[in-house]
Length: 100
Image (cartoon, rainbow, N blue to C red; front, side):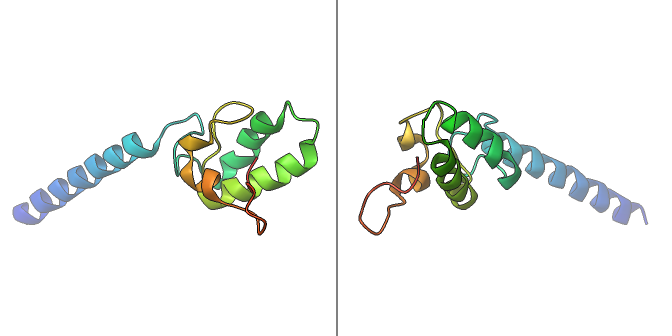
């Protein structure tokens, strides 16, 4: 019984350490970096990204579509797409950028 409790305790410690490591690697908090967002964070990040454009509706539509796929929105209002390679490299049929 004591061995079982010891193994269980070690397993729980290992799980908590692994969870802390994964959270530290993926949790940027600012919406930049591949896969740093959850899908529930996309609307807020897209509102920020599209807030200064005169084409707000299409910007929001494509930003949310790109964020849902890439789980990343570049920092700032324009540019900086190199921070999110998936967001940067997704192209339209014509070869233009899909993500704002």
